[in-house]
Image 1 (cartoon, rainbow, N blue to C red):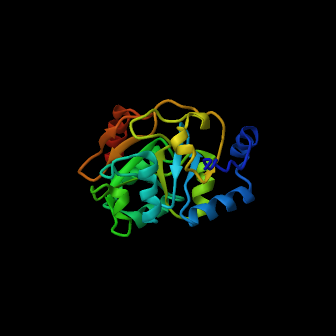
Image 2 (image 1 turned 90 degrees about the horizontal axis):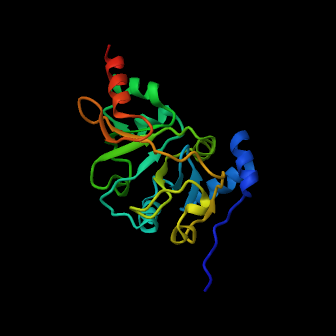
Length: 225
């Protein structure tokens, strides 16, 4: 039996143009239908390609772990459509945390909060916490807004392997299991989002990415003044 090929809706040139002008309604409708049916999409973020499913669908979330060959004790982050949605999925959001959001969203930083019980446990990796990001890339923004629910935000790579700057970088083992590829051409690359835990008294940098630990510390002092 031949492998199912991903259903790329746009050529690279057309997709790149769509990123600049927002995705067409037809493409977004197809993408949303796939997500609503528990499907798996590769989509572009600012630096790297990600894997997106309905983050509220436990079966779809488990599919991401299988496809990535990722240990179930490693949590997945989510993208949200609007900043106001944060309180629906996270608790313990302090004024200081909101100040950091003002400084670094959209994009660049994934903030970790205590998760609400309404989120599937499969997302949390047993931590009780959820990483949340408001996307900056126009395609990711359009996709999550059209869907209206959180999307998983994890890189489109096998666990422990290099992330994907372009669709051609995505491992064949992943490509063969995708329902849709939103191809925006080569991305910026470089460091991914910085991950900052805000579940304690102050920010703790879990992973340093495009924003340095020093910038986070400086911003924190500013918002406390």
